Image 1 (cartoon, rainbow, N blue to C red):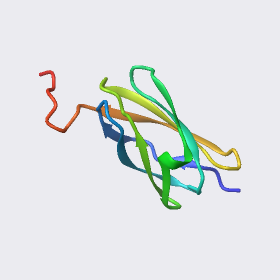
Image 2: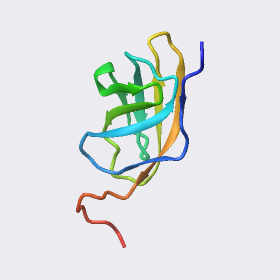
Image 3: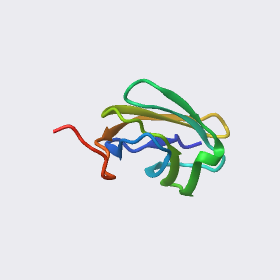
Length: 101
């Protein structure tokens, strides 16, 4: 069985509402679950409906990135309990929200 992996150096814009993000990696599978921990340390479980496989190397993940900039952590768990994790950079919000100068 090939290991599950999330590509490093990916970013998502910060925000307080759930949004859909493309995540790249390798050996992605159907029926994965996971966990997202934002830069403030708030953890949320991701159900199979939140993680959709587009291909072996691309997923769409619905998560709430959080408003604090910094490093979040994404953990993916396959149906056969393979696990991968990666730090994801949470950047400044980009949807017209006020940013600190």
